[in-house]
Length: 252
Image (cartoon, rainbow, N blue to C red; front, top):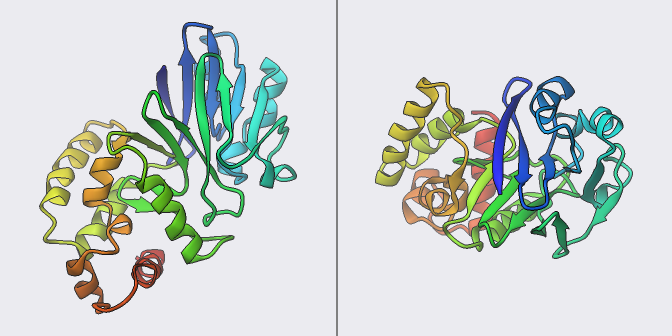
């Protein structure tokens, strides 16, 4: 399994998945046709389009790519009326093959009602769309804070060496927010050095690993006493801590 990162729009990432054994080419969340097709055209084919959710910046190139390459579009059954050109409707815990690669569908509502992640268990790779970012999480548009918290915990329970491929390059802004409320975190300070080095070299900060995120991503650390103290929520539940953090990040 080879993954090629495609920067799209102002800060989106689309991902081409190459499975050489059966010559199967797939793309995750194609944001815009021109940028995605420039990469896909090298392979002269596109078998599958995988959508994590229905937002335009994740499905914007669906129909043009489908028309050019006769691709099959996969997305959540909950979004069957909102994902352009959808062919295959995915449900929670379903296993689906693309070539010889198999992924599991993780239902992670919050950002949207039908948001899903694609977890390739054997390869230890997960595509999280706009739910889990490097050092952050997505805004809650259609769901509730509790739903988003529970969705993040589903991802948190994956193997710690799982690589996280998310939908946007928000890492620098997320880093600044984490430092504001988790300034004593030594793992975060080490990650800061790595992030700035990559950004200064015009390299993506993606992927991160789940182990790194658990140590540094404040939205996965709602049980931490230092963070609770910083927020003035010493005796509050993890969901309440998450809600406070999400509200603060919305206006950060």
